[in-house]
Structures are given as structure tokens and as C-alpha cells.
Image (tube, rainbow, N blue to C red; front, top):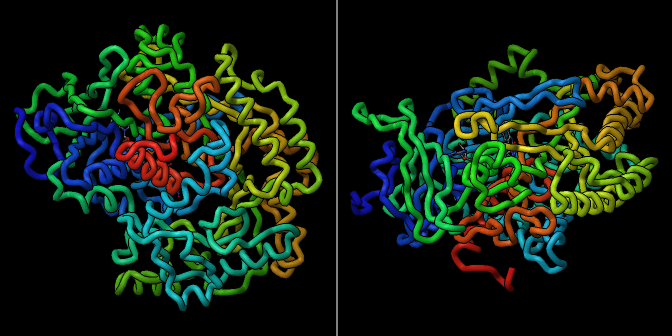
Length: 619
Ligand SMILES: Cc1cc2nc3c(=O)[nH]c(=O)nc-3n(C[C@H](O)[C@H](O)[C@H](O)COP(=O)(O)OP(=O)(O)OC[C@H]3O[C@@H](n4cnc5c(N)ncnc54)[C@H](O)[C@@H]3O)c2cc1C
């Protein structure tokens, strides 16, 4: 040591790493691998990615069918459970996050969607009216992030799939592909929304508009397998000698000299070390960064690592016996995820076939599906989670009550919705967010309601796209280094979430039960049932059934002005620290009205440009 950089490789042992790299990236997930790929493109800039998980080619990760095999494999997931949720009958919930090279992109449900233009314009406005963090500023990065491979023309025609390639690029190694099959029943679900007043049908899922639309799958059309950060941003670069990936290595701390980040400390666990004579596994190893450290450990672990490094709320650090280097109250605050809701309906007279139900109840169809998959990887097994969904604004969902809910939110005592003792800057940021949401609740540019259209006779899961409650992700003060962070969604802590969710559920009912275009299917309501009608009934039902997570943890190192409780600035640099950026879902200030992966890729693409070329127009 040190040895010359020879070939790009996976380093199984810490001592194979160089002492110093230009950049050290913590977390080889969605954002981390994207940045590493871009920074090493020049063949010169040296990068080490430090990743806790393993490099796995398991079929559980690659398989697209159903979209859930990765997430149901404990081998690839962190083992974290939330604290009991006071407003959800003290229920706890698993906190799903990928622990494998590729991170969330390796285990997610492959829904390839982005938020509306307003979602991203809202981010920039926390800084100014001409921030580059806007729809226009991000669209080039959405295009760079994914390679759009259009659906097969015959399938698109038969299913009535609309798309517009102008919203997409075709250079990335990560694909937005399409299954080679659609159930004709999915088109019926889409068409049924024409019976709901006010619903729009944008030309493409990437248009930045709410409505009912088709969207692609994170799938490589050539292999018909998951396309993700590893296949798009590590494998193709594997012959670059300046790109190193260390697996099985858990970063424990950012090294700081004064307030300048100089490297990363990490430990390798024996279970992940491959060498039989590798004995010093419990000892932390350090690696230095000549230029910068980039923290990309995701919405749950990036705040933890900052706090372990002495960057965070002073009181929390003191309770954990960690010396505060930078008192940054926002670290681990502003925690958001998309709540999932249940309202189940069944069409009794849904006689079109094949439908997605035939995958479960029709043996002949199942055999056909398995056969065509075995022969040439086509057919229904190429469908992940589905490719059509409704993303609807609040005035469409609640023509009667949207204005009063918005007014109540604007008039609320915002600070009172946060944990006691919340820093004034964090409270000011929350207030700014809630005022922005009060506007969004009144207009048609932001989606609040989401349901995926499955193509089956039964439907059931809805998503609240803009929760008002804010939780926390903090180190466990009893065992800061050893234990996973303490995750508290603080679900429904803002009572207006109950008001919003009630309207979403009422809409789900009326869009199925009172829709002239579904009447012929003879719908029945399975859950919650016709006896749930009053606001009080709904509140009880919501407390019983809401899940606080769709596995989209975000916001915990928010990109907001420091006086609004922010953790990073518009260049994603941590306030008060030099040479340290955070780039992942944790910088999202307010969730987009969409599953988060595509947004994280776009953030990472933009960050790579900020790191390489500096800010455009000063931002
Ligand atoms: C089960 C599930 C289903 C989802 N479904 C969808 C979907 O269908 N569509 C969609 O758009 N989004 C979906 N998402 C969300 C999306 O995948 C995530 O928002 C996105 O991948 C987050 O990217 P990230 O870079 O912020 O973090 P990640 O991709 O999670 O990367 C963080 C990486 O850091 C590593 N790490 C953490 N701590 C340490 C440490 N101390 N040392 C070293 N490494 C560390 C992790 O192992 C991980 O590899 C889903 C997520 C999950 C978990």
C-alpha cells in the first residue's frame, strides 16, 4: 500500500482500497452509483464507493414479475422497525430500505414515474423564484437519467397506451422499458376515469401533469430484467480503473478536520469479508478524499451518519455523547414518506379476459403465461407492478371540501404540529412547506391521490402523495453506532392529514361506486363498507388501517435555506462543513407526488454536474 489503480473492481477487503481517492461516496445505491459513474467518466477522477450491502446477481433482484421479489428477501433489506405510531393504535411498521449494491433501485417495485412540474418548482421557491431546482431545471436531468425504450407498437395499440418520447432521453444505462403484454382490462380501468368529472389524461407520464396515464417499468427491454443503478451505472463502467466499489463496508463516520470533510471511517464485518485471514474486521478503516465526500446512504442512513459525525441537533448529539461539530437542527427532521391507504372494491361483472385475475385463478392462462415466458421472455410475466395509474389533484378528489381543508392548513399553528422543542428554523421551514401545500390543495397542478390500475376485478391500495405530518430519524442514543436509527413517522400527527385522507378515501368510493362508466361492472365495496360515512367513522377507520410508508423515506437532510431548517444548500453542500455533500432521497424538501426513484436519479445526475462543473447561473 498504496498500490497503483489497476482495474476497476469490487474490493471485498478494506485493505485493497487506496489510501486516498478524489471522491469517496458513502452508499452504492441509486444516487451513489449514478454519481460515481458520472465522476469517473473522464477516466481520471478517482472514486471509491463504500457500500454496506453485497454485490448480488440474484434472480430475486433481476426478476420483474410482480415487482416484489427483492423487497421480500431479508438478505437484501435492512432490519428496521418503526417506533409505535401513537395515532395508528400504536402499530409499528417495517422500514424497508435496500442493503445491496443498487440500494432501493435493486429492490423497488420498478414503477417509473416522476412528479408534476409544481412538485419541483416548489423546491426551488424555498430559495428564490429563479432557482435551477425547478421543473425546467430538472427536465434535462430526467432525460439524462433514463433510457426510454417505447412499448411494442401492437401492444400499445391494443391497450391504448399513450406516450410521448419528447419527455425522455435515450443515453442512460438505466432503462425505462415496457412489458410485452398488457391485460385488456387495464385499458378498461383507465377508460372508467372518463366518467369522473375533472380528470385529465396527460400525453405522457413524464409530462409533469397530474391525471390518469400509462408509465414504464425500470426494465431492460433486451434482457427483460430489472434495470437499476448497478446494471446502469456500475457494470458498464467495470473496466474503469478509476472506479472502485468496496462492498460489505459500513461507514461509521465522516472524518472531519475542523469543519472540513477529509474522508470516511468504516468497518467491514466478518460475514462480508471473503478472505479467511482477514482478522482485523472490527477495526475501523479510514480512507481519505482529496476533493469531497459525498453522502448517498439514503433517507434513513444519511442523517444517521451525519449525526454520528457530530453534524446534527446539538441536544440529540449531547444525549448520545457525541461532540457537536456543527449544530444543524434539521438533520433527521422533516421526515416524510407516502402513506398507503386501503379501500377495496370488487367488480362482480368483470367478464373481459384475460384479466390480471387470470394469473391467479385460471390454470390454462397461467400455463400459457409460463410457456411464453420460458420460450422468449414475453407475456404477463414481463409485468412488474403495473403500468397505469391515477394521480389526481385535490379539487378533483374533493370538489366540496378542498377549499376548506386548504384554508384550515393555511391558518394552522404550524409549529404546534412538530415535536416539542423543535428548533425555530425547522419550524419556519415546516410553515413554509405547509403554506405551499395550502396553495397546492386548491389548484390542479399537484397530485394528492394515487391508485395503481391493476387490470383485475378487485382494487384496494391508494396513496396519499403529500402527507402533512413530519417525522424524525435519529440515532439511537443508547447505542448510536451499533443500533439502527430510531424511525418515527409521526403518522397523522398533523390532524389535517386525517381530513385529506378522508377525502381521498371518499373519492375512491365514489369513483368506483357512483361512476356511470363502472356501473355495468356491478361494483361492490368490500372495505371499509357502507356503514363508514361520517368524518368520525372515517377517522376511526384511518387509525386502524393506514400504513405510514410506501418505502419512500425522504426529507431528512432537506435542501432548504439554513434559516428554514435546511441541511444542504442548492449545491447540496452541508451547511457549516466544507467538502461534504448529501445526494440522495434525504435532500428532497417536500415529496414529489410520485414514487421517488426516478426523482432520485435526476437529483444524482444534477449533482454530478454540480460537482464536476459547479453551479450554472450561480445556483
Ligand atoms: C421496497 C421498496 C419499493 C419501492 N418501490 C418503488 C417504485 O416502484 N418506484 C419508485 O420510483 N421508487 C420506489 N421505491 C423508492 C426508491 O427505490 C428510493 O426512493 C430510491 O431508490 C432511494 O435512492 P437513494 O439513493 O436515496 O437510496 P438507496 O438507493 O437506498 O441507497 C442507499 C445505499 O446506501 C447504503 N448504505 C446505507 N448506510 C450505509 C453505511 N453506513 N455504509 C455504507 N453504505 C450504506 C445502502 O445499503 C444503500 O445501498 C421503493 C423503495 C423500496 C425500499
